[in-house]
Amino acid sequence: MEALIASYGDTSSDSESDSQPPIAASDDSHSQPPSILPPPPIDLLNPLNSSGTFDYLERNTASRIRNFPHIQGNYALHVYIPVFIPSERKKELAQFLKKAASLVPDLHVVDIDVPLSVLIKDEEKLIQAALGREFHISLGRTVPIRVHQIDSMVAMLRQKLQFQKRYLIDFNKWEVFMNDDQTRTFLSVENTTRGLPEVTKQIQAVNEVYRLHNLPEFYKDPRPHISIAWGVGDISQSAKRVVEGEMRKYVDNGGVLSTKCMFTCKFSSIVCKVGSKTYNICGSQGQ
Image (cartoon, rainbow, N blue to C red; front, side, top):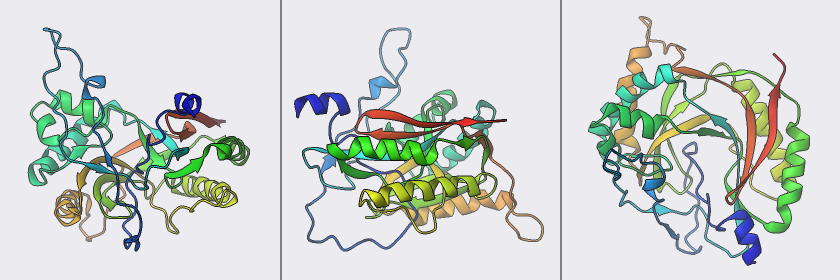
């Protein structure tokens, strides 16, 4: 077992799924109480200043809660499309994050768990920490799998998704999502136009592989998105007020929401992460 853990990382790695479309919380009153995840080491992100110290990011004191209990021998599975925000669009997004942080003070940067309220004091650091990392569009739920399922899962995903043409993905709408048990609220950017049919088709392919492994499929009406910030518990109402205020800028004279794109990225690959180990499932082909 020690060798397996060394290969795939801590079995609890990445056990928390990204933001998901809001749905009714399931009745899991008889399940085990959720475990608490410690915050990641912030010094992995912080650049050294001239004195050789890390001086501007503070650890998040809020607790993260697992989406499923830790069981020895289980590894968290996540299938996703990597996304990077173009440099020329980061400043505009950062302006909205500043506004959001001032009105919803409990927001933190996704993955590194740094309070946005700390980062908004310096726009350059805000852009670097909150927008300069890899994001992802989830193609399936983050679920636990057993070690004997890993090889067949990766092989079937590669078989189903090996031929993928290049396409563009437009992100054109700020949105608020919650995870299944409503322990976290997410501030996200949604894909509702160009690229949506292709992403939806890829989700369907992943669903087929999940089904063959007796794993829960993705949401019936998926809403592809990347999550930028999160908060503990249900803070969706305050977050939605901020989003609605921002989205008014995109409403035309007829009261219809514009399809103006906030930013576009190219589909480049699909990745499967199991514990701390990643597998490249496919790369894009063609023009």
